[in-house]
Image 1 (cartoon, rainbow, N blue to C red):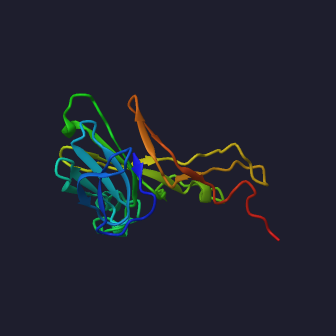
Image 2 (tube, one colour):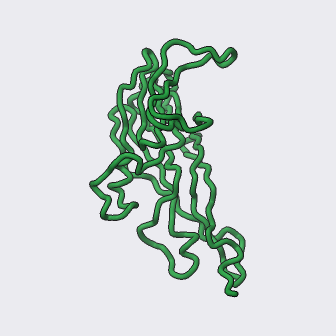
Image 3 (spheres, helix red, strand yellow):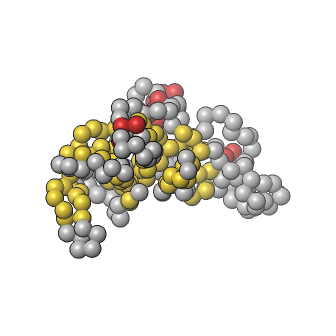
Amino acid sequence: TGHGQRPRPRGTRRGMHDPVTLDVLGRKVTAAAETMGYTLQRTGRTLYVANYQDGTISVVNTADMSVTRTINLNVSLADSGLLGASVMGRARAALAHPRSIVVTNNGDGNDDDETVYVSEFFAQARTSGVPAGDSQFDLNKQGVVYRFNAGTGAVGAPITLAPVDNTGFQDSANANTGCFPNQLFSMALNNNRLYVTSVCESPRGPTGPVGT
C-alpha cells in the first residue's frame, strides 16, 4: 500500500515512475481530491486509488491509465447507521475518508474474484454497548474498514474494529482505562488475516478527571 506524502488537489495527475530514475513511464491518470493510498492488483492490470476528500476509490486500468469505475464509500458509511439514523439513505461526498488500501490475491490470475479492503481514517461512533460513566469516553468509538468486490464493485457492510477495554493502565481512581482505534494509517494482508495499524485513542487517559 502506498501513501501520498501530502494532500493533493482535485485534478492532480498521477502516473507510473521508474523506481531508480523516477522518470514517468507512459500515461498519467487524473486523480480526485487528496489521493492518499493506492495499491496494485498482483496481475498489474488494475490500480486502486483512495480519494480521501471525496470518500471514493478510483479503479484504474493500467494499460491506458483510464479510470474505469469509481467506488463510492460514502453510501456504505451512511447506510451503516454509524453516523446516526438521520444520515441513512442520505449519503454525500466527504462522509468517508479512505486512507489505506489492500487487495487479496488467490493466485488464479483473475482480478475479478478478489476483495479490496480500505481503511476509514477516522474512528466512528459505536451504536450500542457503550458503558456508562467516564469510561465511555475511551470506548464510545470504533475503527472501520470498508470492503468491495473487485469484479462487481459491490461494497459490503463495513467491518468494525472494537475498542480495547483494558489498556493495562489504571486511572487515578484505580479503574481500568480503555482506548479506541483511530487514524487507521496502513494495512497488510497475510495468511487470510488483515492487519491494521492505528492510534489507540484514550481521551480520558490514565489520570482521569481531576476536580480542583
